[in-house]
Amino acid sequence: MIKSELIARLVDSNPHLYQRDVERIVNTIFEEITNTLAEGNRVELRGFGAFSVKHRPARTGRNPRTGEAVEVPAKSVPYFKTGKDLREKLNKK
Image 1 (cartoon, rainbow, N blue to C red):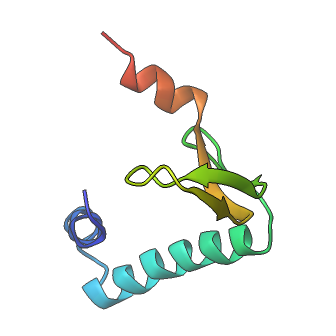
Image 2 (image 1 turned 180 degrees about the horizontal axis):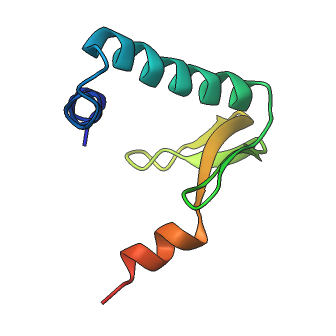
């Protein structure tokens, strides 16, 4: 599902809301999650999962074509851990 499909589903299930308002709500939620992660903080949505930031140290990597050593700088990457309810729904048989 892409963001426009999410917005369309929310509009369909909430006919009393305008599409532009639903778009603004969805964009605000994503912006807040992004801003919170950029500050190095964690975002937890109970039953769904938790977003956090993992820090990867600098390392020496290898160029797969040439085999040459390449310095890879330290970086921060987003990490998502599923919540218990989501895991249970996915593994329900």
